[in-house]
Image 1 (cartoon, rainbow, N blue to C red):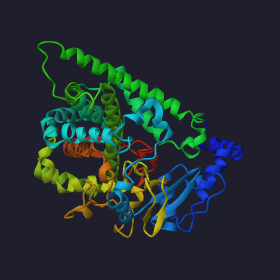
Image 2 (cartoon, rainbow, N blue to C red):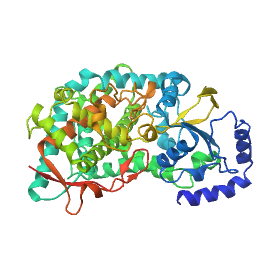
Image 3 (cartoon, rainbow, N blue to C red):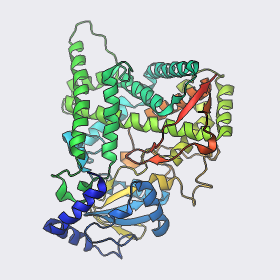
Image 4 (tube, rainbow, N blue to C red):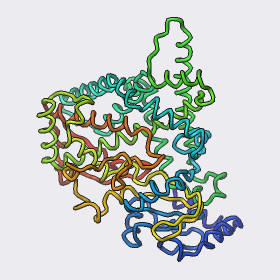
Amino acid sequence: MDFLNCMLLCLCLAGLSVQAFRSFGRSKAIPRTRLPPGPKPLPLIGNLFEIGDKAHLSLTKLSERYGPIVSLQLGQVTTVVISSASMAKEILRTHDHLFCNRTIPDAVNSFKHCEDSIVWLPVSDKWRNLRKICNSQLFATKVLDANQANRRVKVQELIADICESKEKGVAVNIGRAAFKTTLNLLSRTFFSVDLANPSSETARELKETIWGIMEEIGKPNVADYFHFLRKLDPQGIRRRLTYHFHKTIVLFDSMINQRLESRKVQDYIPTNDMLDTLLNMSEEKNEEMDKTKVEHLFLDLIGAGTDTTSATMEWAMAELLRSPEKLAKAQAELDQIIGKGKPIEESDISQLPYLQAIIKETFRLHPTVPLLLPRKADSEVEIGGYIIPKGAQVLINAWAVGRDSSVWDNPSLFTPERFLGSEIDVMGRNFELIPFGGGRRICPGLPLAMRMLHLMLGSVLNCFDWKLEDGVVPETVNMEDKFGVSLHMAHSLRAVPNS
């Protein structure tokens, strides 16, 4: 059942539901003069029809009309949308302690994932332990440095795959190639195996499952706006997500059991991958990291890491192919610093300011999570002269922030040069550019994601010249996006590699 039909059903149910009337009454008890400005809500459904199928665009249009802080009533949920760097700073830094928890979508209750997910857990001792493990054991600089060889091998395999396409004279599906490489980069780092082996049925199923997870979480769900519908799951989103979660957890469970059996062998040689690290911790401090936590942590990291990184790679290539002069400038820098035809090393990244600028500009124009994962107000707080009520959902529109004309000159143009000589980065300190979020809930995988992106993009640009498929010119590249938790190109980018 699609979202519109479900919403119409909800209108009927809400009209008969005492709970809906009571909840709506409570939301109306908040004087609208104290709330941020916004469109007047309709009875029962509020402003749900204001959202549309591309929420980042419709919310940006609302911010252009009402300002950088907008209030909406989405069914039973009071929602505040932030669309400027200064307002984002208020949420992510000044009042981060009041907005560090999340509203939980009904879908992620599937398979009890929210109970062990570093993404959705409230700030608590359990969450802090998981965060500490990520920062000190998984994504620390010394750990990532020690695993450079694995990433180098996976990028070399990407280059080999593109070489094969070049010899056959066929175009490369950039998103698919990036997804395969990203999945293998992560799985090699986590498990010392390749999960994207094209000959493996398990790999194909996992790719479909990961895409299924991100698609289902990103769908508008009426059960999130009318809580009395959660048990009914009218769109079947929780049911389908339970299936996807189960398949992924079963795979991880099998891999963990195999590793546990291997570790019992007397002459076992440690792999020193992330799985070994977590199993060591589980044996030493069982209360901090047990098997269930390991499985759900990998579910978060694999799901988010593959989807967002491959999408960013595709957007970057699309923008460069639309701007041949930018592509030539990037290749000239690589030729001068690295030498044409050579894959780059992670140690080279600091010497490639234009490549870094390309990644930043791609994040600005195409943040892979256009609406940062929702936050929840733990108490009533004043922001920008308005009151955000306790329990309100807060969305930060990173897509709108990156295109704010009061901050960026010609914000719709792809101009990496704007970051040359600039101290703006993506580490959560500069709120004009927040693709990974900010505050204590900034994405823990940021250090690995940045290494992977520069390594992949720099290598494919330096090892090949690229052109669009016959019949496509820079002016006609379709840049339409597809909204979800992550922002993908609606039409896959295909490009032809040359020597």
